Image 1 (cartoon, rainbow, N blue to C red):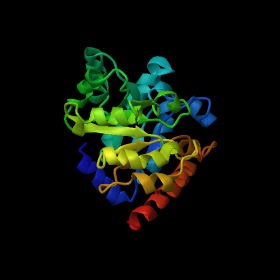
Image 2 (tube, rainbow, N blue to C red):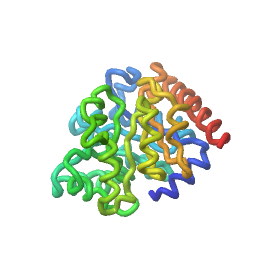
Image 3 (cartoon, one colour):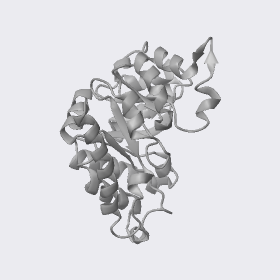
Image 4 (cartoon, helix red, strand yellow):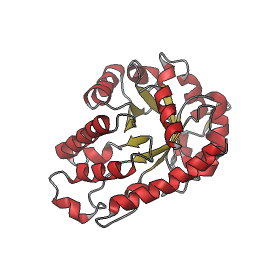
Length: 272
């Protein structure tokens, strides 16, 4: 999917909502456990109930890998279902990969070619040769961890090296990599005030912003500092949407939670 197609969907739906499909079998409605593939059954119900309110879906691969082969099959089925039934939606494999070049090339093939995701999250610690293999895929996007929402982000990401915070050096350096136009960046909603400085470095890049909802991030603060001329935001909510309901009407409850976020986004976009 091209960036232009993503922006068109944002304007059409008046939404920049990304829904995180982080499926924990201990948290889904118990009646789904009788299904042949409870993970996929849960995802399908959530997607069918919320697809008109969101522009992106983000399965965190750890929640699938934890269940072995059946989890990986559910991830594959989820990606295929999105592409076949809702091809206008942007898909993110939240895998946080990054390794030496030939290994990263295999990761890229796995997520972009085999599973067919539009994008994948990556860790920049090993530098450009660990990320550039992802960047070589046309109309695929690499979402670089820049400033994350967890407390441990302060251990390294905000430390000063030669007077500059590490996360700023990561973002600035990444702009020099081959096919850097395919980069997006992860910036946690709990770090919203940092977005103003990030926008000075990458004024037009898309930012994936997790942490709104259960983690306490503020949508209005994210938009205040992070909106760009092409919107440039994908704001993710996982637990706050997918676990909004516990009974057989769980998907309807998820749609209500998603609608609340989408309505807030629509009001913000209409005010621009």
